[in-house]
Length: 120
Image (cartoon, rainbow, N blue to C red; front, side, top):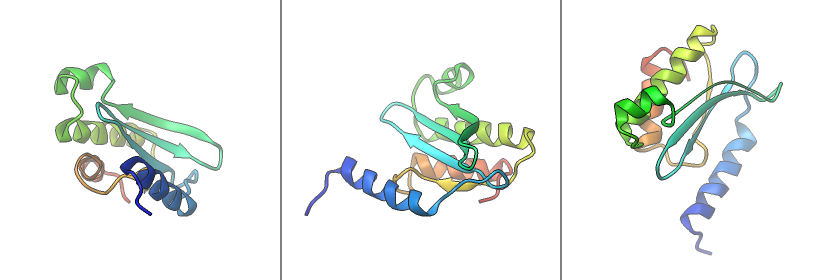
């Protein structure tokens, strides 16, 4: 049976979420990619709370990327979420690519977060 791209992404995301869990010591870095923007949030699944979040909708990132969610904007989001998380004293995370392939904007965000000091 052939799946649409959206259905395939949803199925991959379900398989990933069965395995990936965030804890207080090692929260989950979740990435959501839309056509126009990219969002990243760090979630503690045990307490069901979001620790930090960043996206291309933020005013300082909108000025840099002129409102477009390309690889450069994704790198800025990765750096920003890593900076905010390091300020809270957390260096270890589990990466949740949200069913997206590890390529393009998702890969750029992850690599920028690693360069900024996160370990995953």
